[in-house]
Image (tube, rainbow, N blue to C red; front, side, top):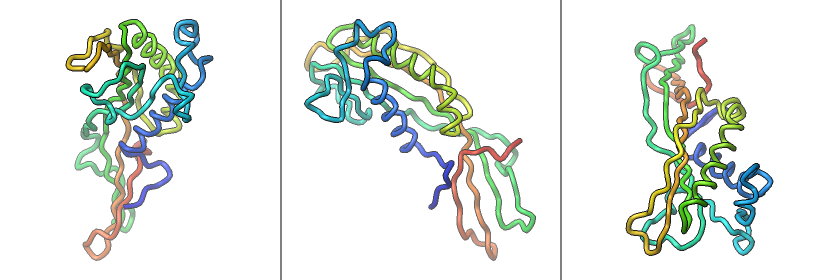
Amino acid sequence: MSYSAESLDAVSLRRVFLLATRELFSDPYNYGDLRAKLDRFKYSDVTADSTLLVDLDFEYNVKELQPRHAVYVGLGDVDFSTIVLDHRAEISEDRASITYVQSATTSLRIRCVAPNADEPLYLATTAAAFFFALRPQFISELGLSRMDLGKVTSPQLIDKAPTRMFEVSVVANLAFNFNVVSVIEGHRLKAYRLSTVSQLT
């Protein structure tokens, strides 16, 4: 399988948002009006210099949570829906190349945890503002067709954690076109490639 320059998959998408979240929390200047409340929290690639853990959500384990501030980034399930009949968006003149398209949707979840109820809410509010402000850039650079904030959850005491910890999540809804170009040779599939750039006008 090969990817074009515009290709997008769940692993790459999750990684992009992880890096963006680390960028946000690497500089307290990004905290805006909440800087005074969050100034001591800073992510750094150097573990010894980092006061805020920012990692992928598969590292989140309730039973092993430490009494520290952390942010976990992940994606939900990817759901597909029909855009055009038989999913065929384009057929080449020699009918050897067919572009199939479906609409794909998923959710971005940024989970903020802390030993008290206020600080994860501040962290989540900052993340929501950051991603909302950069929404046009994410749409144009990643090839998303939609990116909308869904909700910021209320602080919840984390059940079964070894120490008293609270969680607040930011949820954003994402949509993009999932395109597959298949090349037929002698009635057999010769190759295919993925792209998120819509073939529909």
